[in-house]
Structures are given as structure tokens and as C-alpha cells.
Image (tube, rainbow, N blue to C red; front, side, top):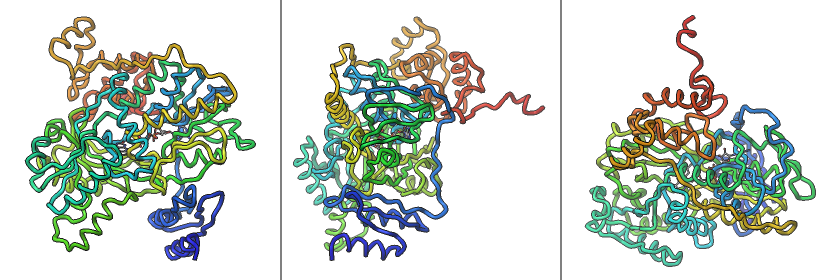
Length: 590
Ligand SMILES: Cc1cc2nc3c(=O)[nH]c(=O)nc-3n(C[C@H](O)[C@H](O)[C@H](O)COP(=O)(O)OP(=O)(O)OC[C@H]3O[C@@H](n4cnc5c(N)ncnc54)[C@H](O)[C@@H]3O)c2cc1C
């Protein structure tokens, strides 16, 4: 029986109504199913990385239609634009590509359907800069994670965003689990990951004084780090804008015209754009965009992850990231036979399910994050949180962060990852379309890898354009971007100095995070215009503290309205249809 016939048999056993075919180098699944679980399972069964480009899973879920959140704007603001490059998506990948491309004298446009950059996964992740110790050497994840991780030190200095390299830890609960660490250390050597080593319990306590009481030892990976993903995203975008990139917010790609294997025109809610080359960095919609260009060889299956943010007062209990080793999780303290141990080690080393598991994470803002978990869902934009997930994460992670209690929780958030069924990045030139570059399947460790992916996309773009035109270096490119000052990070003298120069820095708006009016005004004057409450919150943190904006939000709205010269009810939370105020209370009572 051929490998294709075997696949068909297995998929039919799962659900006889699913149709399986081979088309243009891909395995294609069609039909209808009652459960999302069946659809994901069928997609996984169809994977064959060696023989096919990828899996196109078009099985419909009965009763479900994807509702795409589109901007309310409908105009012709960008109609007829003819940029050299059009980047779709203002997340970390798109903005990293934009900044790299701004080193050249090119007309670059980036369209983002959200009201701000970092509207997708890039604002909804834990901010760990991963080590990548368990990736297969031939995977794209390994290639880009390794390079991206190495770029962070210099990038954080050039772009003035917070970055700490305090290392990551994988904890084990028993002596026999050291076998897994030894295998991972061999992999580290193969992957050229420096400094990784085994720590005994005593050594572990020097690195992480509040390590859990059950931890027998740990794998320590000093190249692991932490950043604020949306601050990185904003910094990349601002530097790109300063160097000439046009960022078009509230602008969604809705269709394409192609001819002779080339994109001729890109339709948006703000007019039709005629780029020479397109970069697809659209996250959870990467397969939809690739399909518009006739270049789809993969399917994104949304994978939600929920995170819990804890009060700064418990931030001191974590300096690194602590994860339980996969076998500690599976074994759950049970006594195991050697055959079961071997099975677990094999599972722990498999590269199949590589969304990073639940961790206890140190943040650059001195909070602690617990999460994220892993949930396959049909809806690409479902960022709701639920009690079941948060309770599960809290119960599980309080076994690692033993000093934490439920009373320390200040907020929950969820993000939707964008894996393909092959579970690897798809960073490549178009296969069936000559003028598209794909950056798809950028799930974790995508925040780590983004700078390196952006650089690769820029190299390919320039090479493509040079076939038909001269592309010179941008003589005015400035790699340096200065962030706005943060009073909470300053000494008493520095604050006083600043307040003397500008009394607005003395007017505290957010008490929890100590954010002043001056800092908010700085953000409003930054190179990428800021119009929404969420955009201000991401940049300088009013509303991120214990009270979650209960006290400061009305004040921030007022400052925004004054600065923009509009009424307070025109200020929105995250986009045109996200009202904060509907009218005055007196009017409502009339
Ligand atoms: C819960 C969670 C935790 C994570 N933790 C980590 C971590 O600790 N470390 C790490 O390295 N990685 C982590 N990741 C992964 C990382 O966040 C992503 O890989 C990375 O942010 C992907 O960036 P991106 O730019 O490719 O995609 P996105 O950030 O999703 O950006 C895509 C953008 O495209 C826009 N878009 C979509 N369709 C259109 C359209 N039609 N027109 C215009 N714009 C469009 C979207 O609005 C979005 O802003 C995590 C992810 C999640 C969800």
C-alpha cells in the first residue's frame, strides 16, 4: 500500500465522509465534520513533510463560519498606490521586515487591519526569547530562532526596548529524568547553543532562590531571555516609519487580482494597491492571504493560549522562566516502569506538538506570568478567556510558583497562535506565485525569530526587485530609535530633573504603574500616530496595574481627546467600533 493510500485509510477511519486528494504537491482534505477535534486530527494524519509541500485542510465545521474582524473604514485613501513592496500584517514579522527593508531606497507600504500595530499574536504573548533547545536541526524554527535570539541584544540597544537575558530553566522532579537533560544537552551542542548545563538543586537555588520544593535539579539555558513583545513591535514600526516606511492602519486586504502567476493588484477596504512584490505576514490569516495569491500550500489551525498576569508584588519570586520537564508533567509524581520512562522520553523529544507549554515567566515589567496553555479552536480571532483554562493554569503553575496565591491574579489574556499542520515556519518564496513571499506558521517561537525572519524577507525582496530595477541603500537609514522616558524606572534625581523641565511629568495619571501625563503626551507625539486607549496602554502602561485602568482610563481618554482636538466620546478603545463612552450620564437619564 502506498503512503498516500495508508493516509487515506487512516483519515477515512476517523471520518468516512472526508475526501482526500493530492493536488499541486499538497494533500487536500475536504468535506464536513461535526467536531473541530476531528478536523484537526485529520489534518495531522495528512502530514508528510518529505513528500508534500503541506496540508490544505478545507474540512468545514458544521454550523461554524469565521467572522473576520474588519476595520469600519471604507474609503479610497490608498487607491492607486504603487509601492515597490506591500507588507500585509503589522505584527512582529511584518514590522521586522519593514524595518530591514527601510535600509534600502524603496517605496514600502505596510497594511494592518487593526487600529494599531501588534494587533494579533504579537501583543498577546509571554515575551520569552526562546533558546530553542528541542528543535530539529533541519527545521526553520531552529534556523530563525537561533539567529533571532542572537540579534536581540543589539536590537534592544538600537531600538531602546527592554530586554533581559537571565536564562530559562527546565525543572525535573527525579534523578532518572536527568537522561532527558543529557539528551537535550547533546542537542544543544549540535545546535550550537552556548552555556546550557545541568544544575543540582543547590545550584538551582542560586539561580532561582524560590524554585519549587519538589525540584530535583534543572537544565539551565543562559541564552534564554525576556522582552516586552509589543514594545519590540512598536519600536520596529516606529524605526521603520522614521526611515520612510508608510504604515497604514485600519487597512485590511480583502482580495487580489493575479495574472500569469503574479499578483497584479491587492484590494483593501481603502482602495486597490498595485505593488511589485507582496510579503504575507498576516499571522492567523496567512493561509487565506496565500490563497488569494494562488500560493497556498498550508493551513493555519488556530491554537489559543491563555496567560495569567500576577501582581508585581510576587514578581520577585521568579527571575527566569521555569517550566516543568515534559516528563515531570506526564509522570505527575507517579512511580514508573522503565518501559514507561522510555516512552515518555521519546514523547518529550518529539518535535510534533511544539507550541511551548505552560511556564512561569518573569516579565521585564517585573510581573509574573503563568501560562500559556494550548487549546485547538476553530475561531481565528477568539481571544476570550474562560474559567476552566485559567483555573487549570493557576492550579498547575502554583505547584511551580509555590509562593503565589489566586489573590495575586490581576488579569487574564489569551492569544491565538498560527501553526500549520507541519508545525514548522513556512518562510519561503512563492511557489505558484512569483511576487509573493510567505511568512506563515509563525507560532512560538515567532517573537524570538521575527528579527531574523524579517532580515531574510528583506534579502529576498531586494533580490527580486533588483531583477528589474536598481535598488540602492538608503543613505539616510538610521538604526537608532529613542523610546519615551518611563518615570517608574528612574531615580528620584532623574525624575525631579525631568519634572523641572516639564511639569506634565509631575502629574501622575496611573497610580498603579506610576505613569505621568508627560509620558502619555510623549507617546502621542511618537513617529507612529496613536489614537486609541489600548495603543497608549501598550506603549506606556496606564491601566496595566492592579486596578486595570479603573482609575486612570477616564483621565487617559481626556488627555487623548485634548491632544487630538476631539470630544471624549470620539476616543475609542481599539478601533472605530469599540466605544468607551456613549454620551453623558445626564443625557442617558433623559
Ligand atoms: C499565547 C501566546 C504565547 C506566545 N509566547 C511566545 C513567547 O513567549 N516567545 C516567542 O518567541 N513567541 C511566542 N508566541 C508566538 C509569537 O507571539 C508569534 O509567533 C509572533 O507574534 C507572530 O508574529 P506575526 O507578525 O507573524 O503575526 P501576528 O502578530 O499575528 O501579526 C499578523 C498581523 O496581520 C494582521 N492581518 C491579518 N489579516 C490581515 C489582512 N487581511 N489585512 C491586513 N492585516 C491583516 C493582523 O491583524 C495581525 O496584526 C506566543 C504566541 C501566543 C499566541
